[in-house]
Image (cartoon, rainbow, N blue to C red):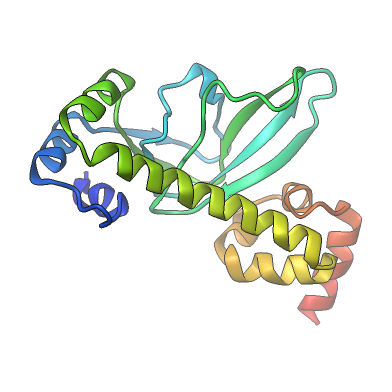
Length: 193
């Protein structure tokens, strides 16, 4: 387990103290998921300190009645799966994560989160920075959705997520881009020429 990458991904402003780094190394767990595995954050140990060390994943909203899936976000290697387990957007839906390839996660179990806040004064700032990074990613995506046409969104997607384009089904990418799968197929045809 490469625990140092986890600590490095927490950022340098503020720096991770020697004590916090030692604590994280001691309590960190490693979990493995296979391609196409799905989990529901509300029923898992995932929290804001879950690092996708190897692999990729997508966060999606699953509609209860229709089972429709709306892709909300993609996660790449060495990024935190910043997600709130209890967050609800629509009453008849729930968040889920699908692993797009064989994946390794590093995480800090929930029972230690309270200690991190109590024992390490810098932790709340580190957590705030991780949340800010996630919000920046979401707002940036929303801005692209509102400013770019379908071709522009796909072109930007290829720049931002070249690996995802190779491992994810097109209908899930279309959902993320807010376009019809047939439209995405036509756009992809243009890009392949």
